[in-house]
Structure formats: structure tokens, C-alpha cells
Length: 436
Image (cartoon, rainbow, N blue to C red):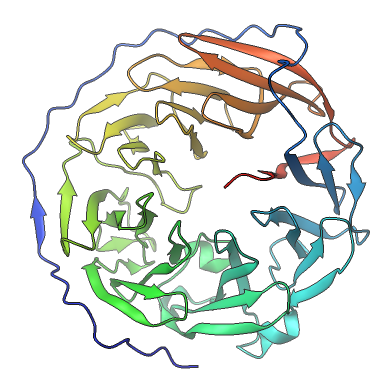
């Protein structure tokens, strides 16, 4: 269906106001020590029962609650990239060959009600070769948002992108934005990209970046705030903005690309500017990070990570020959550099807005705002709350450990949780049951 503009449309100013430049503060940090693993029983006050995990073992989907035995949900040998609904009742996953992104299935947490939600036939009706991704649950619901994208081999022709909403319970799919010619996706779309939309924490609004501007829509697809910001459409490959909602859904933090040319022989290392937009003000204000976010391409993981309170940022800046990790204050623009070279790996903030995990290819590290980093001998699996995170210890990655942060110390604890042999760590996802 066509996307209609809601009436009346609130008047929105798009004048960008830049605040004065701030001075960068370079933190002096020592070489990160290694956390010693203490063989200690799990904290008596910490319950694993609400922990529901999903992961893939040799192409089959498993679900596991706390330290209970894992339950095999599927048997196709072709399943990947599971996603749990907030209540843990539904699991979404891809089925098919790597990078096909043509078939999306759902299954209940007990293995029942397996069904195809998005099929190759449905996608082909939009154009032969159309793919789907990313997949994002609307918070607190079984509604699934996703892009469709169709990219030709000739990078000069651009990609056709659409936005849809699927009901996992009924299987109904509704069009939010009709597929239309847009910018070029990284690598011609052959790798799953991170989408041109973002859903608000309250699940009521969507931000969509397309054709050089950012619109705010309601969940039905009606435009509420048109063109809150415009951005440069780089050629021959378009760099999309990265958009992050404020925790109360009243505005956004937006990273805008600042390059007019990218790809196709251009040697630019694209920089981004960071802005704060609040609906009540209707004006975008640039945050003066004197060392800008910069990378080879923004679709390399995400590069920019905003703290849960939207007051801090972790990002990469490309120096002469390597990446440098920075932490910035989004209130005053002050930044600090970390001594470890960052790579194309994600970062994960704790709910305390002080600690964050980063790195994957060259190691895993716990960073602290205004402090040093420590090395973790294992693979990060996720934050459980503000002071606890899960990781799987090398070399036996089946065993789950809990790390607890207290003041300046990090203590690790063994658990009784052991995942199914042969599990794919990069497929691991989890929710905390009962969490609001």
C-alpha cells in the first residue's frame, strides 16, 4: 500500500545549529592486564532461571533455559542467525544457503508451530534476486520489521529497497514503504546490511533514511515528521546515516556521512558528523567531537555505539594505518582515546553507561569510561544487567562464565551452564524472561 502523509503534519525546523568546538582529552592508559579466572561457584544471589538462549549447532536451532538441557527446535541443517522476541516465546531465523537471505522462518520456544514467514517466492514477486534483512522485532511485540533489497551487479544502477512489517503470530505481511530505487548497499548487497530504518524504544515510531533525507513514521507507515535532517548522497556507493533513538523515544542521535564520493576507486576514508535531534525543539544540533568517527565503511559492524542513556559514544577513527578506539561525551564533545587498536568489531555498552565490551577479531576487552581496559580470555556473549555479563572461556567455549564488575575489580564465576557441543558462538542470542 502507498505510504500516506499524516495530517496535520507537525512543523519541523531543519536548521542545523553547531555548538563551539570542544578540546579533546587523550587518556593516558596502561597496557591492559588480563582478568584472572577464579574457579568459584556462581553467586548465590544470581539466578540463571530467567535466561533463555538460542543458538545454532551445525545448521540446526537449539533453545536452552538457564542450566537446563538444550532443546533442539529444528532439523533442517540449514538454519542461521536466530532472533528471540522480547518475551522469549518466538524464535525467528534464516533458512538456506549462506548469504541467500531468501527464507525466514519462525518457531515457538517449545519447537512447535514452525512455519515460513518470508519465502523466496514472496521475495521474487518483488523482483528476481530480492533479499531480506535485517530482521528487527518491534519492542514488546511479535511484530517483525524488515527491509527488502535488490541490487544489480552494475554498481552504477543502485539498489531497490523496501520496508515491511510481518506478524509472526498470523503470518500476515504489510507494506510500510514500497520498494523504490535508492542508494548502493555495501558490496552490492551480497552481505547482509544493517538497514535504513530504526524503531523507537516504545515501539511507536520509525526512523527511515532514504534518498538523502530522514523521515519519522508511525508504525503504520504514516509520515509524522518529514525530512528532519538531510545528508550527502555519496556516489557511486551511498553511505547511509546511522540512527539511534533516545531512551524515552523523544528524539535521536544521528551520525551523518560527510563524503560526496565513496567506492569505485575513490580512496576516501569517510568521516561522519554526530547530531542530536529532539522532536519538541524541531532542530538538529551538532555534537562537536573534535576527533570524528571515521572508517573504511560504516557497515563494518556498526562502528558507532551509543550508551543506553544517549550521553556517551564509542567509535572508531582511522589514523594513518590503523583504527583507534575513542570514547566521547555527547554533552560536551570531550573525547578519550584507548591504546588498543580497534578493528571491524562491535562494541556493547553496559546499562551503567560506564563500561563497555569491544573487540572480537584480535581479542575481547572490557573498557571503562575514564579508565583502563582489561582483556577477557573468552568470547563475549552479552550483558545480563548493569554489572554482569556472560562470556564463553577459551578454549572450551561451551562453558558459560559470569563476570561481575564491582568498583575497580572484575570477578568471574563458573556456572552450571554448558551449551550444546559444536554451537556457533556468533549465532548466540538470549533474552531475560520477565524483564520489562
